[in-house]
Length: 492
Image (cartoon, rainbow, N blue to C red; front, side, top):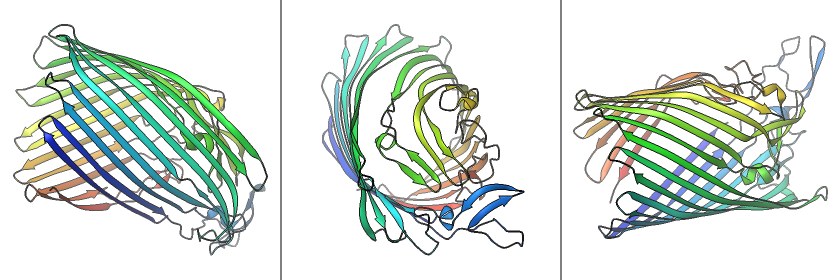
């Protein structure tokens, strides 16, 4: 899967006064994922490579394979994002900020036909251009001596258009012969939020806030091959997400105690609800009836700063209870085809501890480390897959560790960072017990380094080496190995 990725950004700002600023810019991203001829490790009794035919292992018929099963679809994406931010601070230390973002995304992918070969053949292409507009306003101000309020609104509107075509050659996106499907969908989220920072005593501060979200989504489609028309399907949900937090400055020097609890929600995307997808032999059908996922979370922690030794310690216990989890439900599952759809079928729980330390070693060298242990990440209920109940949730590692050194010396700065992520499962039933293969999530250790030289106030040069030890591990696909990034930053 050869991959090309390019990104560029330009940003400008203007200070009308020390209290008023406006900034804006553009960001462009281009991504191409291609395809190359695969390697088959399947052999017949004579030792010859097999790319088609009926597979019989020990008398068990696994199914019929064709070359098309080994071929990857090509994908293309280009994003253009524009943004504008304004901020003004008033004489009474209140502040008003406004922001606007617009995203235009072009996306297409190809799908190989059953009778296609490595050199070409029929296929299809899916085009899914998207538009996303987001606007937000926020106002922060003091109310008396003990209250600091933040209030505001956010509006986000998204559209997704689907067009699917027949291709005479799956390797040529311009070889369209017929329009197969059209579909249009959109979503709108209108939000209002308020938070009150209350100074209860000189040591105790409380934060109480809530957010009101009104989310709607609708879509329709027409299959020109079958004549099937899906009329407009619409959902509308109002969600209230409160939060409470307490921060206590401990009576001993450098100590802080904190606790918080809150509710959150995450709506399904337009892709989840209205756009079928396919990769290889896996077909995932959209589900317009998907509801938002919700979570109830709480945490409690302590921080300690030891000024004499330059040490800062943090420890946090957290728990998240998850509801209406979106999970995949198999409709057809064979050796050559898997059809599935996403459904709200689960509840789950995650619980663990996070520890971190920051240590000043010398005037130019610092140490930092962070460790998260999540012994509990369990699916409690899943009507779509009862076998997953009691199993570990997919893509949830038990151990995550990050540690590194940071240095600043005259015009030079740099870092050396190590990361460890333990193995995890891709399936809700935890049946993928082999992690060091394609489709598996393998444990890995990474070492990254970066060196920065500040030439002057306008120019900065940097060089980074990622995966310095060239670790090869699987996270569904195999890792890219060692890679390098050289960068020049110019400020005007």
